[in-house]
Length: 285
Image (cartoon, rainbow, N blue to C red):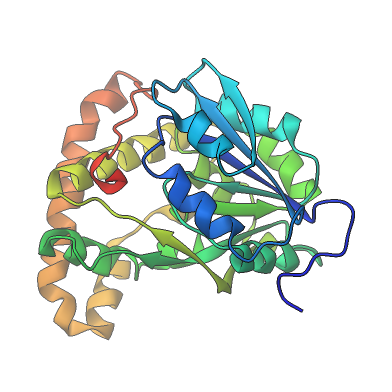
């Protein structure tokens, strides 16, 4: 029966790095715990460098909390990994939503050569302005976006997959690096699992996200990992327009945002500034 758990050990560890996420951590934990049997998941929230009450909000849900004064997602993931009690490991961003059924589906998808799995995206766009909806209407149809594990806020890995993640070089775009660490035959998007992604509420915040994304790709391409398979080319955009001609106005918005983001990211790339995190606060309201 779904939701029942008969083992004495958790069936997976869920690690949630959280930096000043008091406004949204409860939203995630409510979804995650709803339908989960007692002890089914080992949930570890790593409050890193928080100036708010992220840790106390998480403790109110009865999950384990690790605190560090260091505001670093990579450090938070490392600490969470050290504290975790079980494999597989499921890494979840604090600003998304995923339920117990989704975690089970990801857990069960691992094995038989699959080292990493991620859910389908459910973009919460209903109350977003048209330019934001237009951008994501194109973005969500791109082959690299549909096939990669990045931009989903959730990734599950087997014990072998976890070792590979821990060996990755430190980069700002940890989810893109994680996706590229696995060959297509080793990773899987699980269609029966869904993560709710909360896009920016303003065009300005969308631009901040895209500038960060451009910087992330540049950092990875200058390092030991090749990000070519995550690149989108003109053929991809033409294919999207060919399949859905009604998207032509949306394509104009997508291209405009992309070109402006690339131009604004040049200064950071030239300076090799791969630590300034342009955070979108609008989606956390």
